[in-house]
Length: 277
Image (tube, helix red, strand yellow):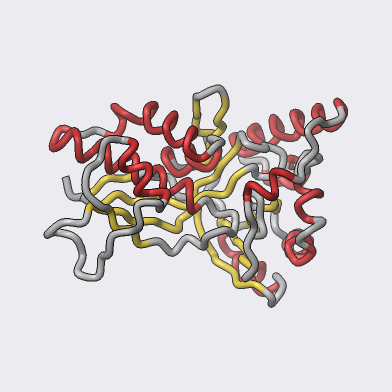
């Protein structure tokens, strides 16, 4: 059994703790046994995937292979937790396991472990998701864009980043973000790429976070100036993500600052997948 789970980009600008997008960088997890890859080594018991695996009733140790950068705002811990939970359920259930039967349970447990649902919902379900109140729904997409991410060498602590956000917000700012989030969901469903830049504007979290990450601010502006349909701070950063047409990825990547590396990706539509059963 191998569980494959995609990375994710959260918030998408205005959808703070609500919107997430699954990305085609795949974490793999399996149980350490005679069928594990030769190079597989058990992760520590404190690893987020191992904690989740045990929380779902899994026994033994797990191995993880992941190209998802840690601490960069691409949902590593969320993907690891989803993978561990899915593996635990699959191990307990045996041959009759069907992820659809436990998806609500996995979402609830992953949200509790992660502290918010946007990353884990995207990694579990794939595509673009809206998550709130314990439920997650995929947003229908009228197009399948490229996603270019700019990843600097620096890292960000999500807890520290959240701690710098104000406890209250002005009503005008709250209304602004509600409107932009609704507009973004509608634009994605309609394929209205001309509206995406406006729809990804934010007043709740990005300015506070970008004030401490000037390189990320430069990357975001560079992406927009290079013709990206929209760009946002991925999760709590410091990674910046941008949407563009498939034939614009090379030009967009070349325009981004040289003090980070770029990945040219697609939206992952599969979400968590269990193979080998």
